[in-house]
Length: 274
Image 1 (cartoon, one colour):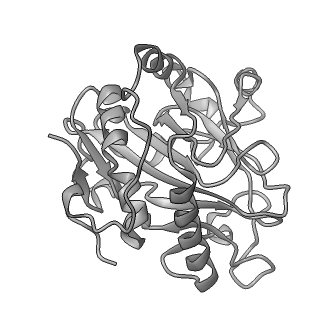
Image 2 (tube, rainbow, N blue to C red; image 1 turned 180 degrees about the vertical axis):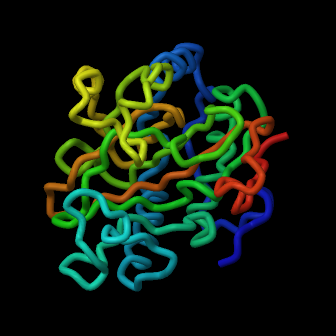
Image 3 (cartoon, rainbow, N blue to C red; image 1 turned 135 degrees about the vertical axis):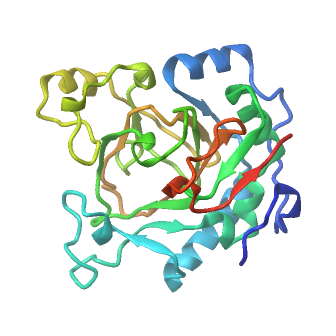
């Protein structure tokens, strides 16, 4: 399904019916600025989550491209190749926006955009170059992700993007749920604290103190997390028998466009507000 060129041209199969309370309170905005993340419970109705999950499950079963496999990521404990045991375990369904109208409807939902406008302080753009996926964490072969910041591989003039994570089912420490180091988007991290892939090195003493500050975030179906592109986050393995699925998009302010010629400029940016 080809991508829409603007929010107003989306042909969504559903109409998102999020709650009608004010976009965000002053306390919520302050909490995001302080901690670097904000959890919004029960934002998306169960029926909409189930529709998105059903689409994801169908695409997983049919291996609808493009997918990213655990064996292609190369994290610790991942299958060594596509042909090895578990090698074709999907880590994410790429191009969620282009896959189905239900994902486009959520990514461009007016209430969501209004919240992002308050946090970014200007008109909002959706980037299709980063995230834009359904993250899946499978039992057995779904690998853990170390402490990292999304900005490590994004190219924008300012480290001021927001990732929006929608839980399609329950998420917790036992099935590979998110962990955050609160306030770490404001930390001064030295180059020697990071490895060659820009993950925090576990053997560095200064990092041990950071890891001790990490907090697990428990989510229920329909809960949404906003988190800053400079916030350190991680996720463990899935120790259950059920696949965990989440829809993830990333947004930036209109005055903070991707660097021309970079990976961040490789796909369309969609202006969602004026």
